[in-house]
Image 1 (cartoon, helix red, strand yellow):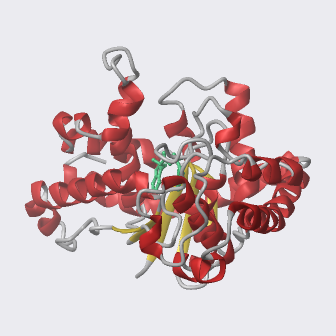
Image 2 (cartoon, helix red, strand yellow; image 1 turned 180 degrees about the vertical axis):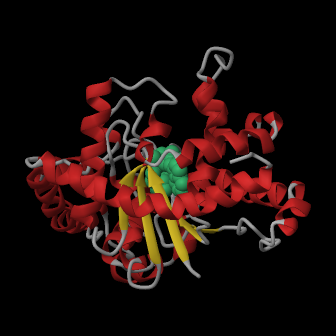
Length: 340
Ligand code: TYM
């Protein structure tokens, strides 16, 4: 079977990186795979979230999924905290994974900074909950941006260690030796790591203090166009070929964004714009971004005007996710040796 799982945290401002690296790529997978798209509210609280703000962000992310074209009749959309099995499996994985594995995670090191004794224990254990999200559904494919690659490698390590440590018990219970699948990351397309519009050496992120560094999914047409026109660039025209983008991080980023929004490759974009200056390229990119993102922002606002409908979509999604999750957990409890 082919099952896709991915999740996004409802924390802070959803941005173009989340859209191009993840949400936009979730949509076509609905035609070929059984898809589960989660709003990972339990991950969000690994750093402090105001409760009202967490509720708002959960609905906003759900609205983004819907506005982008995820169909809640086909895909399962739900919020993580509703399906308790995520927490239950994460605990088992906390006992399979090693502290050393967690300490090596670059995202943990970045988020903890010099203060690693005073961050939540949840932030350290975060990748173990992420592995539980994926493996609870025995997902085979996980579409994410490039920054999640290391977490997915850890998910594979946890699956392999569980299968190995409990190998005899898995067999004694008459189950498949490869009880948890070794998941494939799907990190594809031209924009797997969208950069800040101000600084091409940094990724576009929810936590960047500068609002000008990112295009928010709720930005209106005016804001989108302004941010693109003010984006940092070098003075050179665009190169005719992709090799010419080496060492030009800002130019490379804007070409990647254009390519992803136009469903083209970077060489195709350069074939069209090579030799042209920013005075031509930036307005073309602004038009393209506005024509895709502004209607989506409008649809998100419309959906957010009716939170009861959003909440019922999440509730129905959880109803569909729960039996799938429970099927795996029933086996895991037997494998581990829990009575009952
Ligand atoms: P999160 O919430 O930070 O980001 C959500 C998705 O957006 C992608 N992304 C980007 N892609 C391209 N360019 C960027 N600048 C950019 N910034 C973010 C991320 O790669 C991600 O795909 N740990 C995950 C959430 C998670 C998850 C999961 C994902 C929890 N459980 C299970 C997959 C499967 C995270 O923090 O993503």
